Image (cartoon, rainbow, N blue to C red; front, side):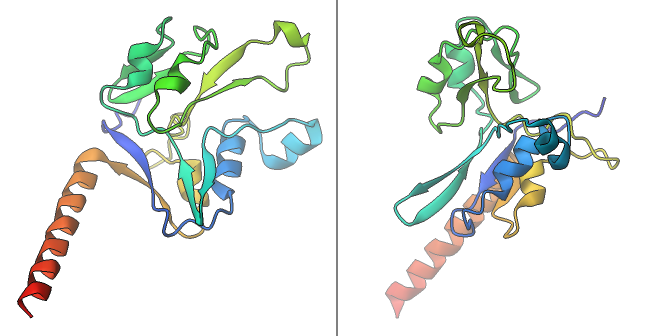
Length: 187
């Protein structure tokens, strides 16, 4: 198996997001184990692991940030949510649907959903925690992680970044802002 660099997460730029929800559809299809046409033919209801929300006049995709000391993993009473190799993962078999993880996630990136394609009695359906898993199952031939939402975004508002690169870029941008502010005050 390919060793993926630790501390990757999805970064979403709300200034570029159109709210088209292509990322939601791509995520749902990537986790449906079939293509869109097959899902429609079978009558499957697709469930994305990300969410596009609107706050005032801004739209923003929400995905798991793969927190270093993930509050969801620390709070999970069954150990269904855990950290491994710098990623936050969910073992749905151990999840009891208690919703503790949704309460402690600072980004609102976890949802509790039941398998809506399961035709068994409603009372026996068990809800499970679901969140962005960075499309772990989708590894391209070039041995890089490929996230369906990133590929589907028409404006490139969503990017897969690693924490160290993101941190360096943030420091550079803040430095540029300080220089601009300093030169404005001298004029």
